Image (cartoon, rainbow, N blue to C red):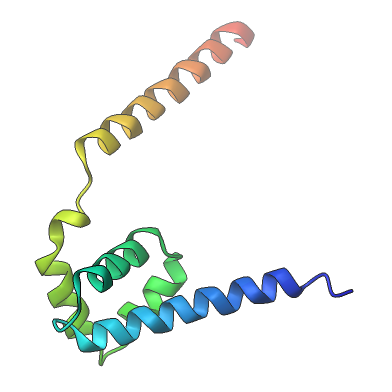
Length: 104
């Protein structure tokens, strides 16, 4: 029994996603709405390494830049996301302050 099989399959899936998105970006702007959603989803939720590999490709960079400019609204921080982040920071600071007061 090979314990590394799930990891290898996961790596292949990630690599195929990156290759798929790179192919879609190479065809940009001639992509469908579904393919556009696929690119946006990958860029928002993909691993930083995979996105970095896309951005470092000199042949794709102009198309990626054009895509990012045209779909800027999908990549901006939403009000709710900002409020959640600030609330989380405040909660962590409150817990740290309580710990400081309890043991200080």
